[in-house]
Amino acid sequence: MAASPAYSLVATDLDGTLLRGDDTVSERSRAALARVARAGARHLVVTGRPAPRVRPLLKELGCTGLAVCGQGAQVYDVGAGRLLWSVRLDRELAETALGKIEAEVGQVYAAVDQDGVDGLTLIEPGYRMPHPTLPAVRVGRRDDLWRAPISKVLLRHHTLSDDELATIARGVVDSLATVTMSGPGTVELQPRGVTKAAGLALAAAHLGLAAERAVAFGDMPNDIPMFEWAGHGVAMANAHPELKAVADEVTSSNEDDGIAVVLERLFPSL
Image (cartoon, rainbow, N blue to C red; front, side, top):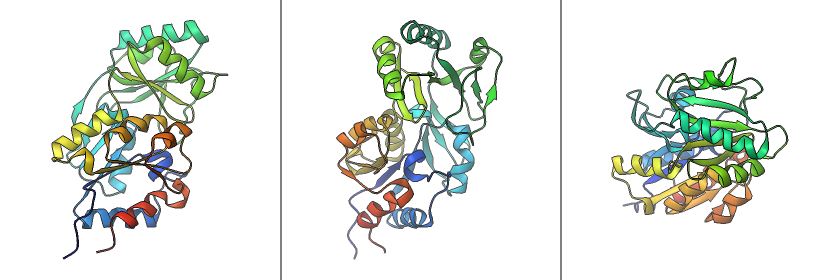
């Protein structure tokens, strides 16, 4: 009888991790995730993308269980098409946070992800989407961003780097919101205390899975809490230095099947 795998939960980020640059998943990565399923382990996507923006991709991947979306603000039941759990970012608080950041760095450009399974991504004038393939609705002025409940705010600055903007934002709004950096051009404000780890812990508890038997894959600083929660954290070769510094191992890049390289070792073919 084959030995049970060391891990019962595989948590993967999407952008820069499971997805290649063209938003596709390689056949080798698909085959590796099929090994995980045959071994009786669970695969959970844990992404910064909100549920409405990732729903078609999850279905295309054949996911029917849970996914953690919106930087941990949403636990989404893919098969049922509903949110099991979600938390909103208070809109007045978000406006206050933006004001504090702009008092330090000058004008920033903002977008929001609305709450809910059908929520829209709204962008104000001057904001450029980091993922041009993701749908967004441009509004006429910032006040229009707050017309419905939101799960997070996305920020860009015309001269500051992502690292610089995130560091300054943390310094001035740490008591109001959690600041994350999840990819190029993607600095975000989300409800205080909400992280990928928080959402993943809720999903794992729902499934009866333990943190110490979880292996997590990621590429950006927003994955650090997930690595701290999971028993084993694997950074991609293309990962941000801050994530590599806390990873248990570094694998190949997302373009070179880095997830598959590790999963083939952890889950020998049955």
